[in-house]
Amino acid sequence: MHRTIEASIPSTATPAVTKALLNDQNVIHLSVHENSSLKPAGDTLVIHVLNRGTDDVLKMIGEHTEGLEFSIATAEVASLTHHSKQKEINHDVDEAIWEEMETGLRHNGRMTTNYLILMFIGGVIASVGFISEIHDLIIAFVAASIIAPGMEPLAKIPLGIALKKTDVLLTGLKATFFGYFTLIAASFLTFMVLVNFGLAKEADFTHNEATAGMLHLRLKDILLSLAAATASIIMYLSYRTNVIAGPLIALIIVPAAAAMGISLYIQNWDFLANFSKRFMLDVLTIVIVGIICIVLKQKFVHQREPLR
Image (tube, rainbow, N blue to C red; front, side, top):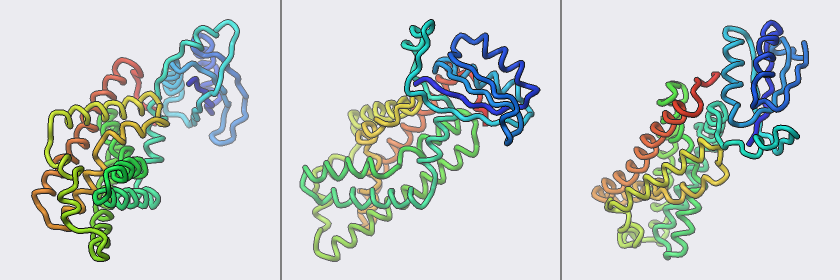
């Protein structure tokens, strides 16, 4: 999508910034409102820019306002029309900018009450799936993988490492640890309740077809995890988060974590070890693939540091 950038910058920086923007072929519209910004004090620039030129615009504004007080807000443009530039508009690229990716992951991947509740619910649903008939099991695993927001904090880890953003890395690690701890605990408690009320037996889990299929790592599992992890990172990097459910369903990370909770309850340490390996496969694949993709995007596409 094309973007609108609203920048509030000091008046002293406006001449240099506007000159650069006027010479930028990717800038479709530029308006300057002098002394209209009260906080921070200065001028307000409204810029409609092609997606391919967003990084250059942000980099340029950052360079001309270095050490000064400024603010920048970005938004997607639903449509953009310009008679002499319509060809360029129609052939724009699909890339997320670092600031938007970080903001989206911050919103969905922070350790908030809502995040922990959704992780808990995901654990409940996945654990019930393990004692269900195959059609209900599939529905439960798909629902749990979508409901539990376990991908976002994991995606923050490679983003923080690749861009050397310590705060992003630490918040990702914190949310990942406590989120999956909550999911595992939810699965533990759910299976305990089911057993105590006579609704499930240990054999329902240990003899389940899905349990047997997840116990051992096979080459196809590694390929599936690699493909799904790569797709999820590319979707974040291209701002296609509305279809992120696809890779989340393919990744077995949520069902594997739920299986770890059940294995803890029944004290089956072999099962726990094998499910932990399956869980760590997805985690490490997401982190490693994420670092590679983000480093490549930084080197060949964005070529700038985030403004934060």
